[in-house]
Image 1 (cartoon, one colour):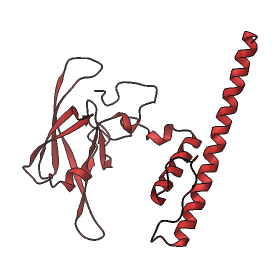
Image 2: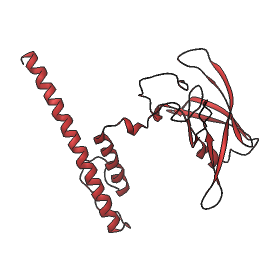
Image 3: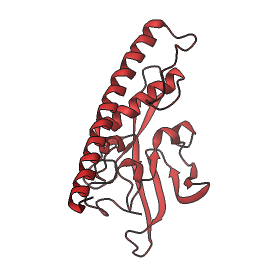
Image 4: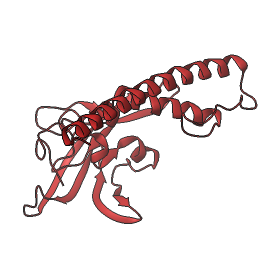
Length: 209
């Protein structure tokens, strides 16, 4: 497993490439009570691919696991991640991690796995959507709206009608946003197709087909 400030340096890693430790899920499961020990696992295809042991204390959570970087020897890791708490508007408190990477201490909801569990900034991670081209993002936004409206997925499919119980004003706003995203996506797809055809013609010309 890659570690803090280790691994690829080409800036291509995204948050989707890492194991996520989300304190909101930990708190929601009631596991932040002092003295509570538990394990957190990640699975893929129903198989466990990674696990970490944790022990909650008054102001911190102790992380206990084994790690190795780029095929090196396994190393036992055991260190605290301090907690911060903020008041919620409707009562109660919300927990936050304090990033344990040296010199950081950012208050974050999510830590990303590596030799040291650290925030997105310390791991130099981008969100997966930041790696997408504008037309790809537009496609995703259009599909998200289609899902909300109950339409068939895919901008090449015909639009559907207004969902039962939805206000016409809301439907009109979502439909307009969908059409704008779909138009941007189609323009991008057309441009990509044009580039692909131009390259194909260039290859044919060089090969004298």
